[in-house]
Image (cartoon, rainbow, N blue to C red; front, side, top):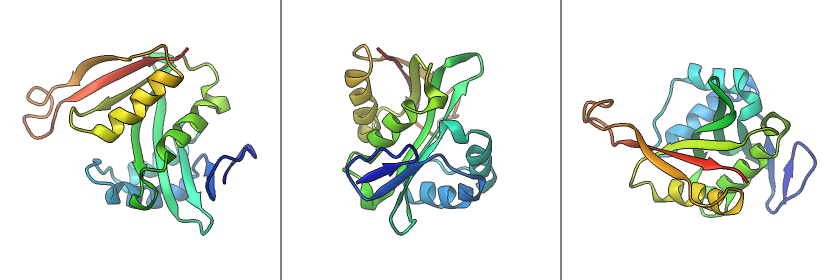
Amino acid sequence: MIATDTDTTIDLQLLLRHPKSTDGHRVNSLIARCKPLDTNSTYCNLLQCLHFADTCMLAEDEDGSLLGFISAYRKPSEPSTLFVWQVAIDKRARGEGLGRTLLDTLLGSDACADVTHVETTITADNAPSWGLFESLANSQGTGQGARQVLFDQKRHFNGGSSSEILYRIALG
């Protein structure tokens, strides 16, 4: 069963909670294991776990091993929109719905009580991410989300990375 920091149980032996600054190094290591996610500096992940803890969520197994992490923030120019930066799931927990459980738990937290939209960026070939966010759009959203290129492969990445497609979901 999944026990959350609000004493809700779900389905596996995991603890879901908001991160603490001391989780930053473990988060950095998890993201490095989750290819093809872009790695950030440990310092960036420390700041995510400190400054954005209320809009991030992690999952630990009963031994304290980190199996999943979602980093997100409320857009400064549009605070009712939660931008999901990364979803990292350890290979031992993939295919079990952990990403969706983390996302649902985060959206159900006090910090996201008045969130009306979720945004993320996804490359065209990232089927697992499309599946996760399309699932959210179909169950909690108003249907299919809106798509547009946010960061273009040539203009923004100088050809070094694939285009990032902004996927915007209106929650219903």
